View 1 (cartoon, rainbow over the protein chains, first blue to last red):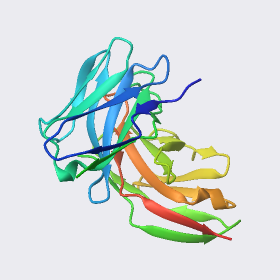
View 2 (tube, rainbow over the protein chains, first blue to last red):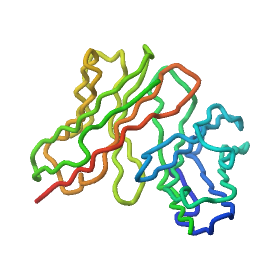
View 3 (cartoon, rainbow over the protein chains, first blue to last red):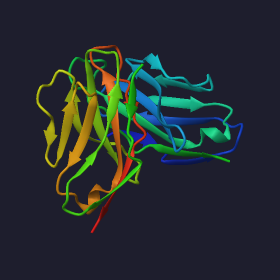
View 4 (cartoon, rainbow over the protein chains, first blue to last red):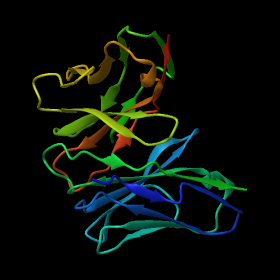
Length: 116
Length: 116
């Protein structure tokens, strides 16, 4: 069973550009969440999608957006990149959303974005 | 609001010895889950162990066990018989159970170095 796939693994962009990151969840998983990891702020929740709908959003500016497709694949977009957006972006997939039981989140290897 | 606190930025342990990584949490939710993840230098977050707030017994998964003390709001990870491959960042995380979200709140992590 294939794991969570994030592409690309590494990315270098210039300030002011925009970037799109992709996440393919585990087959059958319908919930996808995105996290930003930086040395200063740690792991912060960006947003979460379930059945093509954004269900929850973290405290990030509107430059950060995302979407989920009918096959559960998700993309996140960052427009007008700033130096502070340099981070490891992690995607997590889960089978369902908000279950009463342990809904384990499986993470991808992340996309390391560097803004210069 | 939910919060996870990991007070040990870094830890050293000798190979084959046991080590405890501390985690305290704060939440107003009655139902919640506590998770530990391992993040090697490759970046991927690897799920280790889960403890539900209503679980009466401490969770165990192979060499990993979770020392859950609900009254003290602590969920410490115990790794027995440390191996060199255990060297990594370890994150404690929490999410509400039964709500309409899979959002995880992470601590700042503990960097574990296993010495031969």
